Image (cartoon, rainbow, N blue to C red):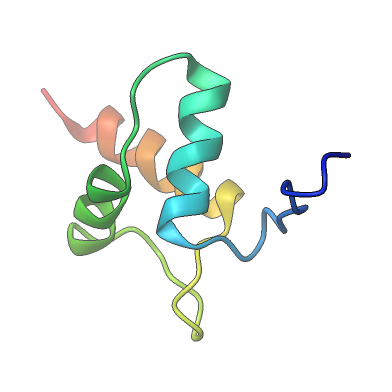
Length: 68
């Protein structure tokens, strides 16, 4: 592993970490602002303010399924 690349815990991500992982996985632009917008719209956060990637993806899926 590169010295400047630190492992992340997918169950405890910052908005910036979540944006980076989602962008890398999807090949599409995902910014920290986009993740923060999702949080403002109700995406679940842990008590410490971090995101669980699985819970975030489930929330996004439910949100998209509810759109007409």
